[in-house]
Image (cartoon, rainbow, N blue to C red):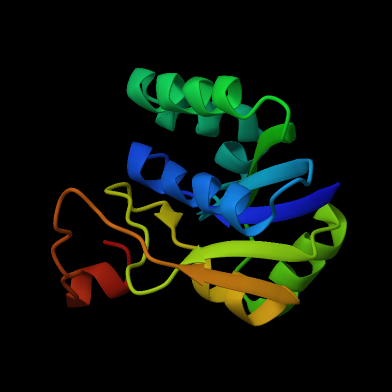
Length: 160
């Protein structure tokens, strides 16, 4: 069994990366960890009431759940487990600890495109994965919709 990490933005397109895992690790049971970056709240009250499962549940659409279920049914003999994890750190060292805790040695990441979420609290973990996981496989990845470049503003820098 191999435990692999795959970044996700909770879109159906990001599930393409799971399909590539089956192609790159044939005849192997996979324990798949879908990881998304999340910026923790900035107040003590919000941190005290922060629940990882609730944050993940808020982003799981019916379409995403259905596509994931279809993959699980099609590849039930190749899947040990598929679970979600949030990375709430801010640097490479924190991600290194995160990877060690997950006991992951392999990763599948998009080659040219990065994942995107419209929510400001979510961020793409692809760069962290690329720098911290031993065996990283980059695969072609297609987005159905074009993502506009992020606009930078003075107010955005100071989170106003």
